[in-house]
Image 1 (cartoon, one colour):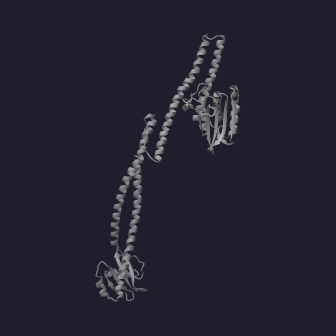
Image 2: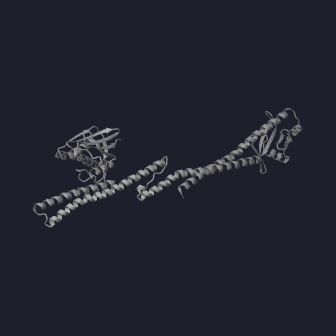
Length: 440
């Protein structure tokens, strides 16, 4: 069953239940209201008759004055036990006098066989209960009014349920239609037809869902493309040292390289094997960062400790390249990270800066807008604008790059640390890398 049909049925069923409960309550309330209203009308008629009695009109004259068979009453004298005036059958009055207290004005209903009557008992003279005027109305007459009113009410309810059901159908259709369209777009995502995706017009939370699906599709498309590029670049990066190793190995085996040439060939083979090993280790690390949860051991690390450890490890490379390392720590904050992993990310960024710097690399750590920032700036030529959008992709490297995986590893580690890393141009002319963590 479609979602639209389910929602319509559920809403209509709920409406019918509510209407049924309300109808039952109204049905019982109507009778009480009619009985009360009828007693008030009988009271008014009784008060009018009392005025005639006080004006000393004879009972016979009063009977002629009433003269309306629809008015059912009797006048009873309790002292003489005599019915002085009546428009009702004698057997019915005798039954009531025998079974009911005619001096109790609070009585609402009297019974006679299977019939019930609304009763209004009115003393003729104030403070004297000797004579009572009793007016009655058959309850069947009121029940008929109740049924007519209730039938009209049910008719109105049915019309209302019909109108609301139609409205709910169109409203649910408006709600479900974007979901149906999203389902077809998800089918396209499942089949990786990212170029065929169409935007779905929606509003409210549905618009947010649609935007999330669209963003997910773009991210998935980007990820699949990056995987394709990764495998292409990986095969190229692995193939190059393997071909070099194969060429020198076959040359040495066939006697093409002898003596010093053979020694140089062996040195090249060893160097290429080391380079190949480094590429493979970095690829394995990237794969683990993407897939394994237990590879990341989080702990509270002082930022100052992290910067000092980075300086200690990078100093030999800086001395070799004759680059001066300068650092500024303007915060005593701690961050919850895997220290060794983040230190590796920092070393990749700082080493990259040292290789491209003309003479200095500056590291800063400071607080800004409730965020902890670590920046690494160099005074080199900076990053090529064409390389900037894909700088952190795997096997993407500049002219003096090594494996093309260092910055990709840094981004993966920083993002696993709930941070972000960006690249730009520094104030001293070269590249500027900014690592940002949200402060607690």
